[in-house]
Length: 129
Image (cartoon, rainbow, N blue to C red):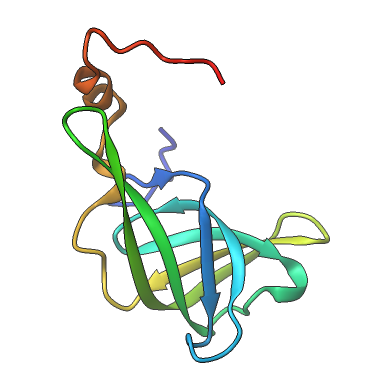
């Protein structure tokens, strides 16, 4: 772990669509979720559609919630927040960090890999796709 890490909560790293805009009454833009905590998220989007630092946006995204039998459901979330950072990934892509005005009621990154491995039934055999 990086000694400079100041986050108080483990983040869930996953790649899933996120929709965002100033509000949901106008056109929405699609991005790709990078990571998520209860208090904020980071996603990538096209540079020409990127919001600016300090801007207020509304996001809509789904979060995988794992069950004890290795199943999962997607929980749909809508959160308003403020853009706290925008970084250039390439000339065409930006990474956007948003801080939610109201935290999620759960901690998405707290599902540890070991918990998931223990939840896998002994008869489970992964299938290559």
